[in-house]
Image 1: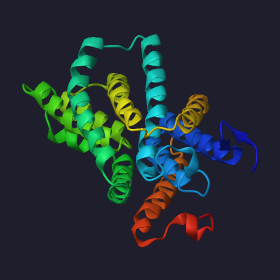
Image 2: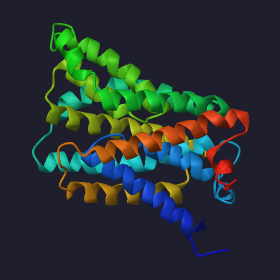
Image 3: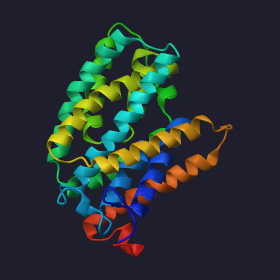
Image 4: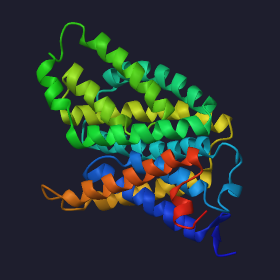
Length: 282
């Protein structure tokens, strides 16, 4: 047995920390970091020897989904502090928007804890490709031209939209930031800075509930979660110091390739095929 950290092989620590760093970097300089972390956890938890460190070896996808929320919580808490330091804060409005998302997320996470892995994984694969499409082609501006933001009933419509976004966030989480931004920009007409500050506030508070439910089900591994969160923070720091040039196409290329590989892996599992076996890892 090789060198271990809290019972986790050092190689796995490096792999997970690297994935977390990549995700944190993407979230800072572009988009889509959350499309990386959940499938990475699923991939790693299914590697030989790693599943023994989790309490629930029969529901590894649920453990991955719950563990991912540790990094999400830390990342958004840090972002909230960052926005407050810059004077960007609208506490009352943020609370009003968070309430419907909180109710939806509670329903979503309960559904997630009860959905069999063999059902959840193909759903995640489809969601990943769909979110990738939305991130790359960004239909928000086109939709804004078709809808009158800030209309008479915009607050009610925004609340309803965030309720359903909350269900999605509680269930899967990956890419939920894109949906929140779309809802606030299209329906509410908020500017991008305010939208991002509201987004991290909403995600942080419903993630507290989501994480609590996963913990109560024994579906969170704290060693993996903290390792991932540390990687996220490192990647975000690197991203904040990166001189991003217009047209940094390599970021999109790497994101597309990674998401498609993970989506393929999830889609192959019902046929007893996956990327691990093809690479000789499983």
